[in-house]
Image (cartoon, rainbow, N blue to C red; front, side):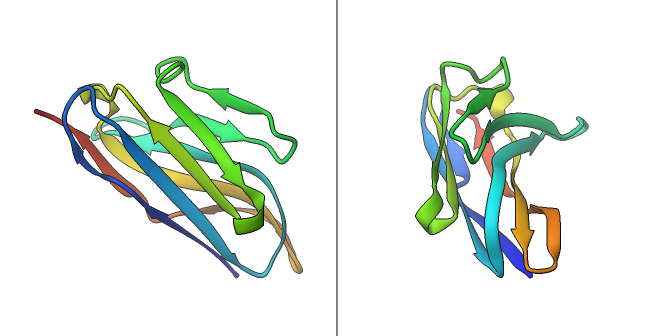
Length: 119
């Protein structure tokens, strides 16, 4: 199977920065879209950013210009550089990947990492 392991969350002051990482491991043949979602307390999970296998990126309007998604295909890892963080960015951030394995294609999710923006 495939595992996604996130790291890099934590507590940061408004205006600060954090970098999230998500490493995929297991019986991976190829990975299509990788991305990040987040879920704040009492709210639905929302898309933050995605990175396709073809190199195309997309962002939620709320994070454009502040967050940058990148990807290292050799390491099966996706990153999210978050700058100019705001209290409203506080959420659990989940890594997502559309993965092809020897038994087929499906979506995988990480366990989530908490990001708290507070003074």
